[in-house]
Image 1 (spheres, rainbow, N blue to C red):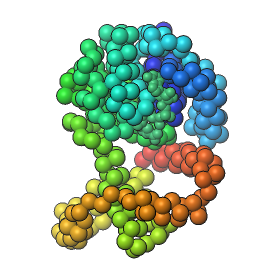
Image 2: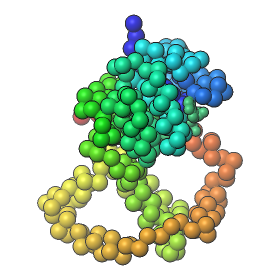
Image 3: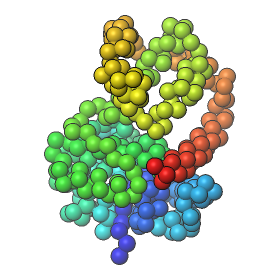
Image 4: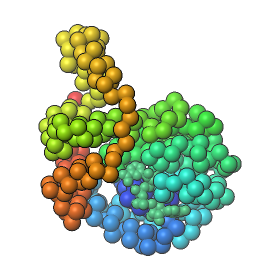
Length: 312
Ligand SMILES: NC(=O)c1ccc[n+]([C@@H]2O[C@H](COP(=O)([O-])OP(=O)(O)OC[C@H]3O[C@@H](n4cnc5c(N)ncnc54)[C@H](O)[C@@H]3O)[C@@H](O)[C@H]2O)c1
């Protein structure tokens, strides 16, 4: 019998997860409380699969698509599933409710990962019997192109759960990173948050345009970041490595941090200004087209990274 995964919540992220598991050979059951979301999913998933074929990232769209099947009820979706990827709205009550329902229907050995972007698992799994089998498995959108997945246990998550979900993610070509304990925003959004806070602030204070701030990442920092992180970056940016870098440039970063101790909320005026500048570069009507363009660029990058890693 093929191994089975249940996707609960079939929006943007749930659809992306279904591709991750189906392309690795799993049978995938889709369940959503909104029947239209399940009904609309196959054609949207198919569009993504066809693009993956065009880029040489999968061989056969039919084979992958046939492994993904809608389920009429949550119970049918969960039946014989070894893992559930919860991907409902980012809302504590919604997540508590769906965990209650999953708990009532799930097999005794099934593991449950939540796609939650920032709500820790302790906020919505405390009340369920299966809580030692629950953790956060936070992806990047779309998960079939950006493989990192953050694994964050609640205080009651068992070590075996973390270990097993880590192995499962590795087996489907995702790249798990583990946190030892919960913190709001996890790793990815905390790191992104620091950069975003400074970007908004530099616009607010009139130091640079939105376009030039984006270009600084696009033609600068981001080029390295697609294959190395901030610590490896600085290790290679001083002749004596990271300690040498800290000695040379540490004082600069400490002065920058000291100049930003006061927290600024993004004001409505500032948001309007950033929105005005972005809409001059991209009209609201073109956002969907540009998202598809982004995914195609990510596919080309995935091919490049795969080829580089095969050669390394
Ligand atoms: N969008 C992103 O970039 C992104 C990235 C990483 C993680 N996430 C997280 O993934 C989760 C889903 O986000 P999304 O962007 O796919 O949202 P979405 O709005 O596109 O989809 C959510 C889906 O959940 C369904 N749903 C809501 N309550 C339900 C219930 N009780 N039972 C079954 N289905 C239910 C909705 O009908 C909807 O189809 C959120 O926790 C979000 O924070 C999002």
